[in-house]
Length: 356
Image (cartoon, rainbow, N blue to C red; front, side):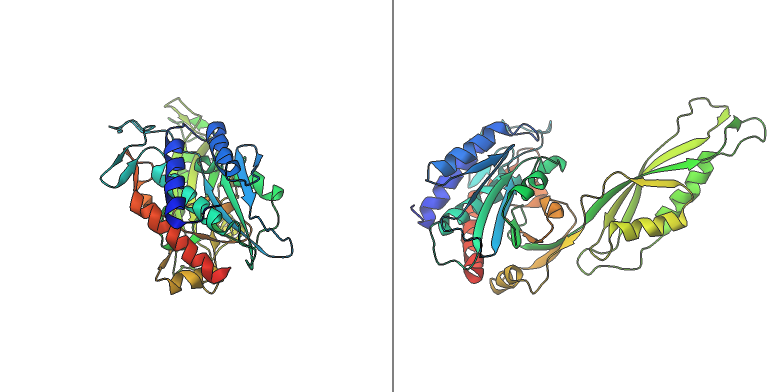
């Protein structure tokens, strides 16, 4: 395989243009999965597929060695109405490559793929490398990396490709959505009847708006709770509602488990509180982990990310890092600089050269 850096960069940028031209909304990634699988197979690599997730291991894979996962996603959100360019036309102009998914996360995906290809033939690696292009990241779906991981060899650590300007997101907020219900008693609004569930809910909402969880993370700051929806089933103006429902968005730092957060909330509010899901947990990678230390050696900074990614679904330490800028994700006329991809590939290779 030709591992010349310029050749690798050119070939994966060509693949990225194909991916941009191929719609791959979450749960509809069949065609981009096929493109990635063909790209690997054309280079003599035995690619495997499970649902719309494509993966491959290095040529000299050794089960006695630890494995590093190189992962990013190939699904996209739907284009918003602000586009002035065709979201499925990979237009290259003034050093920018435009198109839906170019920045989030096509650029990181193909950069990790080029990195995998660079090391693929090496027989002297201290670790195995496993490349995985996964589905449904944009909707935190269960048929993406979550369903793929049990099909893979044991993973020691991962690099998750997301647009971070090639800085290191070493921690990530968890997301827990709570459904809360306050219970009262129905009655006529004109008389002193009933027990107004809205008033009871308001007391709990006031607690959410003022309570401060004591553990504040240096990387992610405090736990943040936001009441985002409130409603009753009652449509009559003259009936005191017996029930009031509200939704709480909880962003959790790495110092708390979801269970600890729930215990505090339930001890302080009267409403019945039920989490919709506890899948998207806060995560962090140790600052003395070899991947992080290698990045620091290369002059990379580290930070805590307010956004969630597939890193939240990984039961091992993972570093989120990739070319592109998170601020461009999901925006109209999305783009990534060609130079960001080229330098991203070189940086990934330099980082792994210190670990492998």
